[in-house]
Length: 302
Length: 235
Image 1 (cartoon, each protein chain N blue to C red):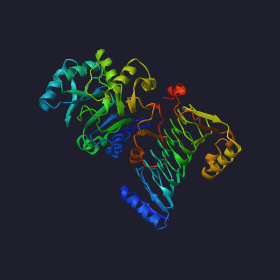
Image 2 (cartoon, each protein chain N blue to C red):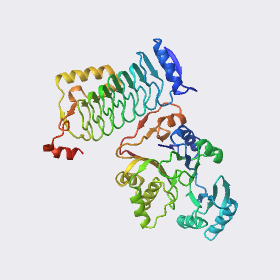
Image 3 (cartoon, rainbow over the protein chains, first blue to last red):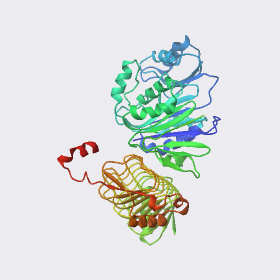
Image 4 (spheres, each protein chain N blue to C red):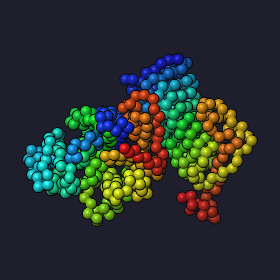
């Protein structure tokens, strides 16, 4: 089990209460995933800058690590708005730098330093523990924006720590995040092929490969719809999966409808969640909720 | 009619009170169900329970004789293993509605998910809209009526469940036979549709004579080496 949730505000003016909405949904899904909780929220881009959320790592002194990270990127760009919260360093960097190079330099500081998210509007925070604890640490409920996705995790096959939690950023690909409920059974085979072509994996979590897969497709210039449709044949196993980019959000459900995923669409919003209880907990009112069918794929975009 | 609010109560408390009220001969109006799971499970007395909104998993499951009405949608396993009674969801239903049910009636005004009526052993399922992947799989007895379209693998490997489909069968499952409904079938369908569907939905459903009847081809009932090809295809 795991719980996944997504909210897409149709006003598209970046002032929707996405933080509190996703948090309400995750609280209702807490019992499906008590190991960890996380959100990927899309807010208004700031002057074309990249916003980075960086895990400082378990092994160094956080204050030393901050200095080292800022020095590591200094040759590329200046680090602005630097702040630390919990296990994270948050900062902004001029958006014209090469995102892969930027991430590589930061992660060269130490093996346990990881860029958890990067993008002009995307920010991911995730940690071990409940959605309530996530809120205590990061105050995500205050975040306003256009859309967001979230996850509560029940680990079945890989360890419980910050990096193995979801959402996953597609490392090196700005403004792309995924959440997944299920198991990718051809994960090891796919991973081996990706590793042969030089892709670095940060975790043993099979869900990470979905982020890599989607980034690969979007990187070729394919629209998200096409990437998700191809995923139905390229990924084996059970998956209900939500993907968000700066201007789109979509889901795909596997060929056997192994995992639940429901959605509600009104004139104002789209909500997607593992259980209806999460949708009803976040929004009162009259609207229709429907279970996605096997092989159903939907994308909403600006 | 007795009122029962779900707010601030555990599912165990809600169900216990529901059972007590039914035992006293009261009908129950449940408010704020909030799509929570296991509401109205194992109701063993006749009487009517109305949910004022969506319910989560297994609503009406294992029940015997109660009449349950959900004024919203239902999650997975609606009326699973029900013995007798009537469960109606005015919205949509998730996967495996009516799974393994033995008797009674399940009515879904909207769409139902994958594996609707899987391994049903009796009773009647009526879906006003479309049903999902592998619906009717290994159905043993009873009837399933889908007014709209079916998903892939429809009515696969059935025993004696009889299915009727008003819309398009996207893909038939293994060992199925499709035929026109008989006069008797048409009367049965007309009676069920008139009794259980509100006019606004009934008016959009094809006439009973236009439904297709799907039953088992009975080729997979007994293993025969001479028919190895049939098995190879099915598996």
